[in-house]
Length: 119
Image (cartoon, rainbow, N blue to C red; front, side, top):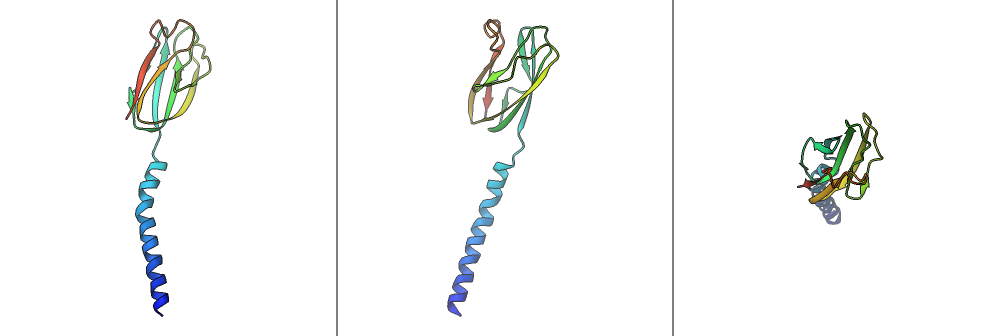
């Protein structure tokens, strides 16, 4: 009978520890991704927000200009987008500063660049 009580107590402690740890883990893994609307125009970017919390960030990029543009951040980029076209870029970012730019030659130098901050 004593072994049974010890086993039940051990199981209760293990389940209590697991129940305590799960909400924090579940919160982190199921956090809603941040969505940033990016408007590319001739020649610049307008972002709906300049920062987001760490985790998944979804950049919804729309080219409202006449020239082709893309959007690059953290080594990932959209395809070249003609005027009126859109594309979505999903990136997992840690805390820090992330430069972004258009990779079409001359566009970043003309102002199609910036820094996105992850908190």
